[in-house]
Length: 425
Ligand SMILES: *Cc1c(COP(=O)(O)O)cnc(C)c1O
Image (cartoon, rainbow, N blue to C red; front, side):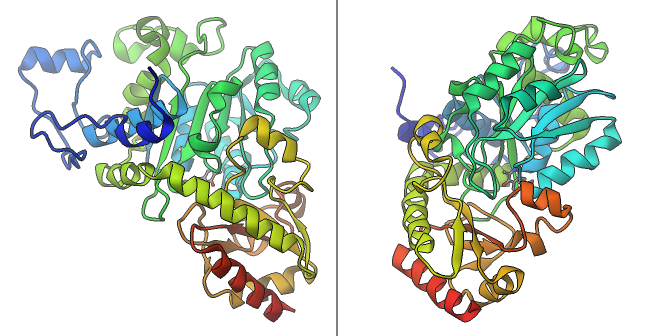
């Protein structure tokens, strides 16, 4: 019998501690682990036996979190990383190489656009940006050097919902993995593997932890992609010199990507999550479903209220009937469209800045997915580095405000927006 989501968010990965019986998962604040003897140590280093060596690679608290997120996403394995951005590099690392490219959505978190359009070039990787709603554009962007397609299930900040099944079909036809950033949706609202995705990445900084205490990320593997079907993914299919010619896919099957990410990715890139952070995230995930229900319900009411306000020219929330993505909610994230969206003010840039300054309950921060309501004006902050065209493509023009609706009393949220809109003129 498969347990329900609400049961798994509490119990997955959380067996009583084998040493003490501790009911809650202990924070294993240790760097290293004693080997039983020299033979045990040799086997661990050869990947012939699974166990703990050194916390850059694996740690029991982090491992519990990996198991929990993998379970909630319906994946084969997961690897936690030091941030969402680290997770994105860790997801691409086994797939890419100098001269290779990834086809990515223009509608991504601003930091991801910068990471993909600028920083990955230092590795000899490139990103080809496409309108992720345009299947022909995705198809046409794919060439012999393409190694993955990358999009967000519910896009930050615009709340656009990707037609994951249609994109996965394009990826399948080209023999490529589809990587989905599921940060805004969380596995409670959307499970990308059920729509054909190969890998899921999260910024656990956001809804998974849920209270603004942690920077963390995770890569989850569905375990279903055939890395050996072509010669495109030699890191996973070809002999690995650092492990005496062992082939990851042949040896570890559905766990090939996960084992590679630990044994090579974390070993050599070192983007490791610390056990204290893993503990906070485990605590957060225990209430994920309850928080997401309230985030969605509050966001729906707030979006409807804003849509009827004179100073507001548009609201992007996909839960609104006016949204072009309304029909996709039922298909992609039937439990709701999350708590993140943008709206536009008639008064443009000046009004947005005044509005943000006038809010009292909302916190003006560069974060989302917190229990408390958050606001930011992307054009003057997170999306500042982008060109005007990139800003517009990412729904972050000068007149746009992004809100992450918290789980407070919804009337208080609306009252704060009301007084600030009045002050913004
Ligand atoms: C915040 C965010 C990231 C980056 O995550 P960090 O934990 O800040 O590194 C990536 N994708 C999305 C959708 C995000 O919201």
